[in-house]
Length: 210
Ligand SMILES: N[C@@H](CCC(=O)N[C@@H](CS)C(=O)NCC(=O)O)C(=O)O
Image 1 (cartoon, rainbow, N blue to C red):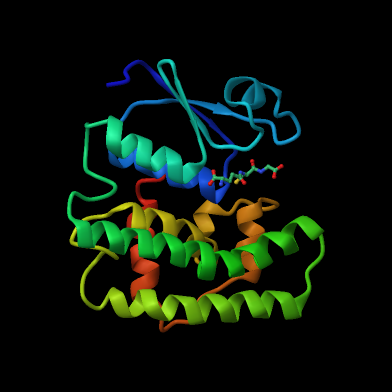
Image 2: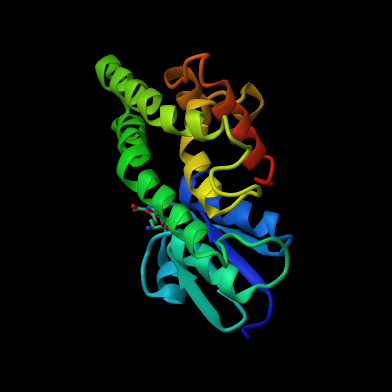
């Protein structure tokens, strides 16, 4: 079993970094954070052989890619709750939500980040992002009529993977200082009032983002 201190190389407030941070806090695993300069990937490249964040270092073991990191933590760090499941159906359901994140939620997120990085605001594109997220969260809202979490009765990787995307559509004022990316998304992205359960669920997941 790997052991040793854990270091997270991260680029806040990226959704991929948020996933890993939430997982570490949820499992109550202590870690050291190294904030990466987006314009200087030399250290990340040296450690992991590729330039993207997040990267997790656990003793002598290096893992990159947020989904790989979640699986690594679940399989190797026994402390705290599970992120995945010993149950086959639950495991399939979590992986189903992971695909939903990539294929459905990811589309709206891509439009929103594309707008941010373009430095302009195209009202039509933002409306498309908002409409796509409204449609996508219908499935989440329905699922949440049956319980607090997407799979089973505890938070799993399914919640962490999906809520870190939907978060950008319900950023609280307290997390959006003027001029920040969060403030930009807060200004342009929103969920309709009928997504009340979805908003509550995002808050429950994001409560672990410390
Ligand atoms: N599949 C990777 C994607 C990692 C990724 O795209 N990271 C972004 C930050 S969220 C990054 O480092 N982008 C830098 C770039 O594209 O130059 C994961 O899930 O961790």
